[in-house]
Length: 337
Image 1 (cartoon, rainbow, N blue to C red):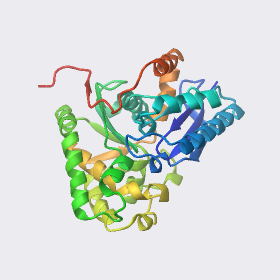
Image 2 (image 1 turned 120 degrees about the vertical axis):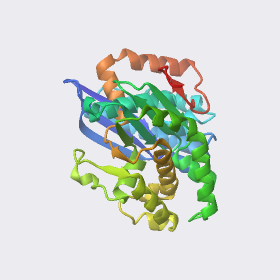
Image 3 (image 1 turned 90 degrees about the vertical axis):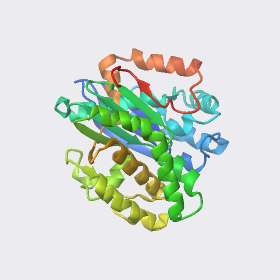
Image 4 (image 1 turned 90 degrees about the horizontal axis):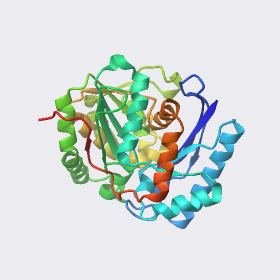
């Protein structure tokens, strides 16, 4: 049995086709289509018509690719860049009517929950109480839990692309005062969530997303060509040094640094500031870079809970308006003083 998942992010549309018959998503094909939606959309602004057309083309191409590899219609979702757009419903309707793909948006806290599931399955039970950080283009997801699913999650508007646009604009490289202002914003919005992580005292901390993968490579982690089973760590101290390195360079020069891709070079500094501030506030001296994240979490939930859960998400997506901003915090387990 083959299942496919499609992820519409701030930069790309990514497709994973996986064999799922044995209860583990084993990728047989991956593909991506560059969109760079975040460069065409002001945070909180509408998705322009030209961007919708490109999105429709990419979704249709991904759907055809999944079919060629023997997978049913993909489990398709869009992250914060579409979720926060005021014309979100119109965009989703346009994609569905022109491609027959039921593209959904997931609430930020559900993204965090599914990403946690992917990380838990990759790290295993021996990792114990687990903390998770995930930096996207539009939001930062944080989760903590002792079991299969997290005890609490937080989704905050601290994505690398969003903050680059808000704080740096056309200043390249930005002046130190703007970097300090960005750090203050992150500290303020993360304060309560960070306090919860410190109180829980996780045994293991993991980080997912392309932002963390590229920062890990910049700080000395093994390149991707060495495969997913090589352990990759990112320390808070190394990340602090990397911030100074990134802040001194314009985006074009950052793209020549190890791990920093040209499409993400402009937002790499904001991503590094968010990552370092989050680790420092939560008391995490280092994190393990985890290769499984949201897409794998969606596949795992589909395998473990059956197709009905995704059908329910699709149904709700068609009927309900999602919140304009991610929900700050959901506490699912009592006991914190």
